[in-house]
Structure formats: C-alpha cells, structure tokens
Length: 192
Ligand code: GRF
Image (cartoon, rainbow, N blue to C red; front, top):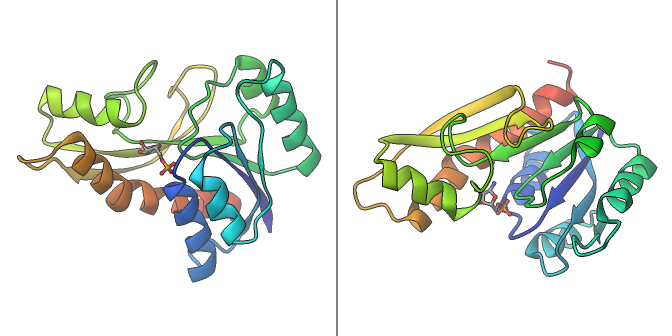
C-alpha cells in the first residue's frame, strides 16, 4: 500500500475525490497518509479530519516554509506527493528533492492556459476569453517549470454558450478533475 501526501490550499474538492475514491475502491493501492495545507483556513483540512486523516498546516508565510514542508514529507516517507488545489510555487530544490514523485492537477488541457499566473478561476476566465469549445483538466508530473512536467492524464469538457468562469470551473472539477486525479493516483501506485 503506497503512502500519499496531499498538499492543499483551499476548498479541497480534489482531496475529497481522492478520499471518496479510497472508500469506493477506485484507489486500492494507496492511502492518504497526510494532508498538508499552506493556508490555515483551508476547508480541505476539515475534510481530512472528517475522514480521520492526519492533517497539518505549514503556513506559506513562514520564512522556512519549504524546508519545513520537505522535512514533514521526508519524516512521513511518502511514496507520492499530490498537489490538489495547492497554490504555493515549489522551488527547483523541492522538485529535485522529490523528483518523479510529485503530481499536480491543473484545470485546463495543458499546454493551453497554464504556467505562471494561471490558477483557479483565472484559467477558466482565459478559456472563455479565448472562446475555446473544449477545455478540461490535466494531471502531470511536477518539475521546475510551472505546469511543465510530463502529462499523465487528460479529460475534455465542453464549454457551454452561457458558461461563466464559475460554472465552467465547477463542471471541469466534477467532470474532469475529480475523475482523472484518483485514477492517476491508482495507476501510479499500482505500478500500472
Ligand atoms: C480549483 O480551481 C481546481 O480547478 C484546481 O484548484 C482549485 C481548488 O481545488 N485544481 P480544490 O477544490 O481545493 O481541490
């Protein structure tokens, strides 16, 4: 059974999808060992507690934030680190230290609408502004280039004429992110 750390910053709907996937058996080769938030107010921490998963906050405001994060992860000896709505940019020191063991979920079909400054609603605002008919989500390995690592999985979602950034974000989460992230975790942890 592989040990997974999930890094969060906000609502935690992707974390919830992972926890639910463990219960229904979509994920059977891995277990969330710890949830770490860089933001003490993240509702994702409540979701972890409700599922009796260890959850801690390492505030991004701390001067030695990344060093604390690295040692917390080393201490737990996790096999896979999942960035799920995690907003802090991780340095090359961090990505090298955990090379090949960090994945991220991004709410667009990379290489569209990704990289510096593209996160959360901004991604969907850009997709609507460009007038794309299809968007979606991508799971990819994390390296030193923001959203630049090897693509693992993608799933497309139609953009509807009356979509707002909020309605599009919700549909991309439900119909793409929450489906491909648990599947990617299982496929990596089962050695598929
Ligand atoms: C959302 O914008 C989602 O698309 C992206 O991170 C944000 C929050 O996700 N992956 P979550 O609800 O905290 O998992």
